Amino acid sequence: MTLTVASLLRRKRDAFSLSVLVGERGLEREIRVPEVSSPGLALAGYSERFVSNRVQIFGQTEIAYLASLSDAERGAALTFVFQSGVPCAFITKSQDAPEQLLVAAEAAGVTLLSTPLKTGDFYRRLQPYLEEEFAPRTSIHGSLADVYGIGLLFMGPSGIGKSECVLDLVERGHRLVADDLILVHRRQSDILLGRAHEHQRHHMEMRGVGIIDIRAMFGIRAVREQKRIEVVVELEVWGARDDYDRTGLETEECEILGVPLPKVRIPLNPGKNITVIAEVIAMNHLLRFSGEDPAAAFERDLIERMRPVRDYLESDDE
Image (tube, rainbow, N blue to C red; front, side, top):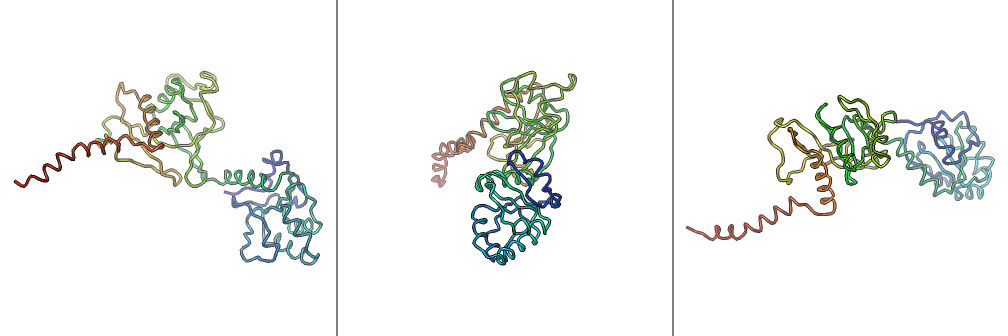
């Protein structure tokens, strides 16, 4: 994944109140990593661990330090920073840039931008944006719904009833996130967020009916833009297998973008109320998240009730 400086400027010019000071010929430079850095140590002369492929931010501390240097020291430090290949640099709080800073950036063909935001605020807003842009992504065939605040991802063969299940959930007061094609991206190391394609959002295909608009039919509360995926519900044809979990003690997982998710397999046969089952799956996940595991509690209680019998049999030497 790469992002050009021009793309960043186009998308965030208004949000960050950005303006280009010098280096317009560097707008096509590529930003290749989501991390943001400060050139403080490099300006002070320690260059061994300077990460030159990161976006650099000059805050008040860096500008004040540059002002304390002699012209020769300032020129050498800035030349090193900009000639090392940084993609772009920002000056925060709309500070006046030293002349040598402008000259060094222009000479190296690096775009230098200014923002009125405070340094801390700018870090907190730029870093999440870059992480979002560079997040691992994939697309999945299925349906995603928000059920009691839990993101349930329904998967299974085409025509098994994923969309119909989610439609019934919406009718019962739950929310549609995406149907058919789900765009998934990973945030941080263990969070998967799913959303619909921008041209598909809030729409659903019903065989025999056609395309329907969930938002228009059920209102704004029936949809949401994105949702964290927390449980995978695999719908299967009844009889496809005979090893379904009947106690809840054996948990199955599936992996999406390197993130393990709990997986529940549900066999379907005529008359089965998959909607209620989906609500139970969501509520059971909430219970486990809060520290209560009904299946494990049942097993512990059963073992405790069997203890006298086991003790009696162990003491029977005949």
